[in-house]
Length: 359
Length: 76
Image (cartoon, rainbow over all chains, first blue to last red):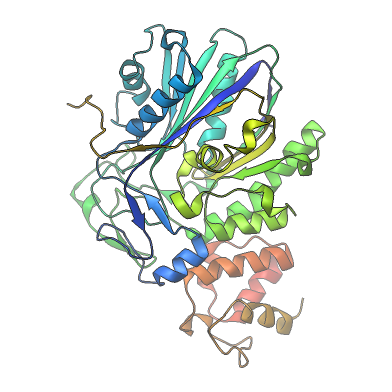
């Protein structure tokens, strides 16, 4: 059973970067792939996504870079002390090299830097946080950055109006006084095709037919675009998220009702409301960022903390966070913030603020 | 679990449709208000009322409300 406890690791700060451009779902743009199955009004009522941030130029790493520069400055960290980067995304800059390597150089970090990517989606912040905490808790690496996000797709084409672009940074620091980070993590690969981009990996290589459009739940898609079995994912989310939270509570002998705030992956409003109802949570303790930024995949938990809980985190708080989705994969973490956590203001990037690491 | 009760709970998920004539034999996909979004409400209702996790295919394969009722019953 993947229950993990990490001592000696504090979350020093968090930041998020988004494109400046706002796309409204009530007035879809030419580039929005709207389903013919339902109206924009019904889509907003069910998903809760009124608007989101999009860009045809900014990559995930650009958004993470902007957020990282702001957070490092706000923390007052010396860049030479940052010894690790973990970049968690399913929209990296290149198929290879790893985007974390580019970010090490772009941020001007030391060459004695651990840097790698992790490919996982909605549960990405949980998987990234647990993996990076495992590197920091021994004290071998004392300061490290977890970067989680997704932005424009790998192929030019219409965008799904459920999803928004975001790149987040969570700064971790070795600290002998830190309270424990407690995790439960899980996987069910039998649902591998519930959310999938069928072509472009080595299982189904790219051919001309990859670009041919087909009809999928009222939308036209090609095989280099991701597709989702909406009802399967919904059913998975409403059963798995509450179970994971209950398992974590039971394993560590805690009452999940004791948390100050509950931050869920921003999947869609109907799913999230149902999870809150099933767990009998006080909805005033459950912040959402979905209405403003959409489903931002793995970034959605840190996005919600940065944009909705900045003031509340001026005092120590106990947070329970749960992410679930593509994989299928899920994770839950319980942790306490301390008095000194830095939450940076949201960083908004112009379309021109892209990387120069281009070939 | 009773068919009439299931039909009533199913009918409650529709807002703009007169559902007074809904029965087990109703072809729900034939209804103008039906969409994959109401499909999500069906999955939530079945989870809440019957503690059964439906798959998308369970909803897609059902033609009538009674078909879905039978699927839920077989998973209880």
